[in-house]
Length: 498
Image (cartoon, rainbow, N blue to C red; front, top):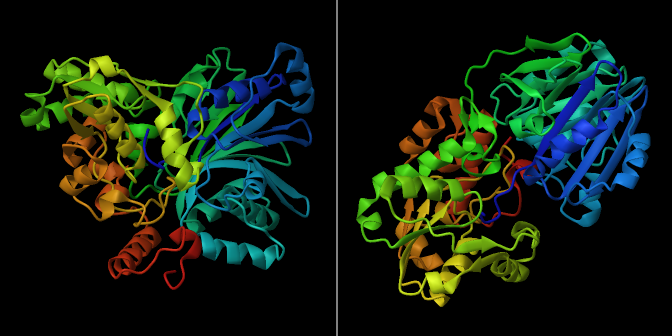
């Protein structure tokens, strides 16, 4: 339960070559990925024309009596969908409504519906470029930038491959995209670094093909996993199956490391491992790295729920009992990151219940996936103290976050990151812990099964895979160190940096 750490969205698409409606498949594919975006959701299907439903909040439960109404509203054997958090555009209710994906754009006879997961780094430059063609363009989310830029290219070339290639070359950032053209073509593509995940699969009878941000979107529909899309790859789904075309060479793969620590569901697969297996190894690593603490601890607790697997791994490594004395109130679903500061602490306090009889007089290791602001962690530690815990040691699976993210995590400034200006001992004092221990970067990387150069770890190392992001980070760090006030998301402002 990290402090203000949320991702842009999750996407799903499906094509049924026998003509059956794909809305049920997309609905369940996104329900399985609703953890990737609570602010809004949307569906677009195609049956000769585009049909769209978009709304704020979680994907709703559909009552049996209303199923046919949904099928009538969203007919078609081709479709895409999205669940979203905001890492670009406005945050007012009206702005959130206008920024719901999928988005649609058109010029002349060209029309495209599109949804994506990620974030655009050269955001302000791209907005200026698009306004040359669409003077009245009102920006609300990065999906609009990609969609309109793609439409501009299609209007000129009338060729999907060359148009997608132009977008890949021109747009810097993370983008795992799925979309539909006015001809009913279903396509998907990844940025040249493959920063955000996107996998493909099929039904056993091969009548239906799908793409999903996570493998759980395939699993819930009974679809078989085929492959993870390559960086710089264009995929089309049709009655001929899945066609793949490598449009740009991948000079450096850079999958977001935080997918392993927090974003992805534990039962999803990244690379050759299930995420829960990686997180268990994270916990085991922390046990190996800090015996001076584990030798004196009475119990392990975890901040539910993304730290649970790490807590189990720590228990397996050390033999210390993993005590499930921290429990979430399941139906308190408000997200701390979208609340006003004065509301955040109360909401966090209400979300986690602690069992005091288990804690009195104990030395506790509290497993957590990350520390961003420190707000959530501070509240939980204070609750542990109030319940009688003697000592509280934080074990954190993701290395210390020292810099902003440009690729789809809602942490855009140095000033909001407790780790950008404080070392672990100082952080412990601020949040009220006896100590804070982060997993080492090398151990984290080894557990993922990827090489260091195959992961994006910019927020933990200050080294970013794309050039403009690196330039922005360096410039903003200098300004921050000089004491200048950060006024917003640096990739949307970018004054004097581009």
